Image 1 (cartoon, one colour):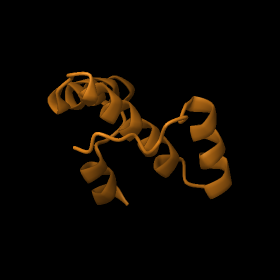
Image 2: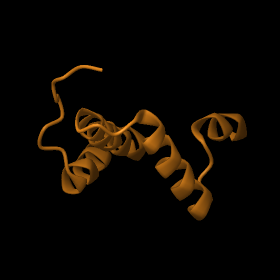
Image 3: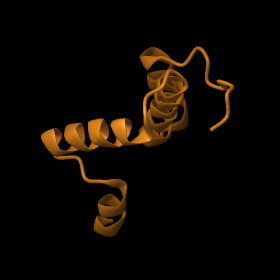
Image 4: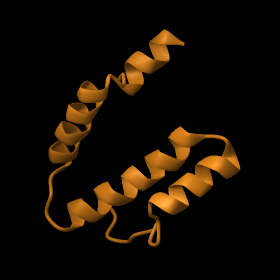
Amino acid sequence: MMDTFLDVGMNEEIAEGIAQQTGNAWFAWDNYRRFLQCYGMSCGMQRNDFDRIMKSYKDRVGVPTKENFRLKK
């Protein structure tokens, strides 16, 4: 993992703006997630911590994993 943060300044408002400008919400919110994950890992969190958190939320709201999403298209 790189030690630099390329998405400094990314927040929910900016992610929403990117989603509207590009018409691709997944792209915008995935960039925000990557920023948060990179920051957390630089502070000592493990990648598996994020995987567990994401799976928990996806299970709770019924969002399929990316692999399952691709299969359903």
